Length: 58
Image (cartoon, rainbow, N blue to C red; front, side):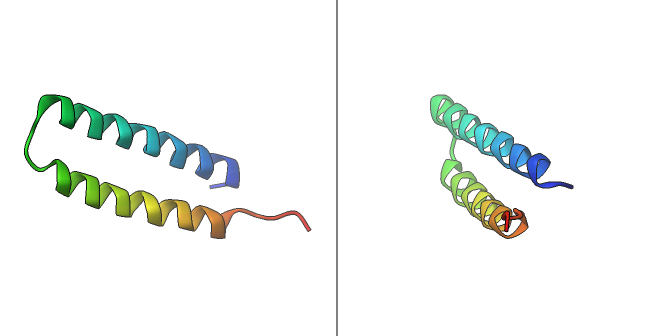
């Protein structure tokens, strides 16, 4: 997987995560806190890895 594909994937996952949290909030379901914590941790790790994977020009 190249750099652009990984960054686009992370951006798409971030948008989907935001929409999921918004949907759960609108529907007033229980467990939104668990989804927010787990999803936030997964996204944070993904974005941290994108900084490692990204190639910097010399």
